[in-house]
Length: 325
Image (cartoon, rainbow, N blue to C red; front, side, top):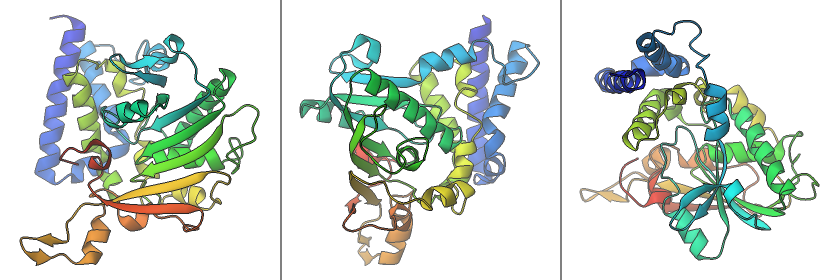
């Protein structure tokens, strides 16, 4: 068996064992090690490769990251293509995914937006790194878009992607709270945040399970590479997403960005009645979309400046229309 084959088999075994361990322990074991879970997985790979040394120094990881992350444009029949192969529009809708996204979150929205005449792009970024690092990466990509002639963008985000966008729009090294009027950045006309954990989510403490899902999905659709275990970060985003984190304190301490339309779409997963019995509205609001509570989606200053919409649906189903969280 070749080395790449042995690596993939080993990782499949590790992922299955990790999933079984999560179920058997109620997630506690992985919750306690969420920040080092990816590193632990990679150490298992290194043992198979026999490479030894620093497990963060996977040969080719930096080159892989340059190819893996960045902007893509949606083209019907071709899917997501590199921008180098696509014309640059004057205005675009830019989609920003969330934590440990296994792929497919934009499967229905991208073609629907394209059918309405929008140029649709998505950004892929190392989503386990600190959120402020992801915001810096988003800003770098936006600067590239502006240099290529894109003058205006509408941002549509899912989950943690909303925090990435808010950070970019409010940090001094980015938009500085003003959504327009920057020579090196495109104007942001609209920000639509779907299921944003503006005040965090306790599910972030169990992100080891999301890590298993992300890696397994990549393996099943044939796009997995060993570098996937290290290029996304070490789980710092999960710590940033915990309610009361220092990161959330800094972000929510900033004023809302000026000069753009903002919409928050929140989900209410539980129906009004279950088995013929009325569900306490407080429970429905606390569970929210199953991952983010309704209270966590809200921002101070809502009303005239921010439209808040509540729809029936779960965390991913708000965008995909399919079952399961």
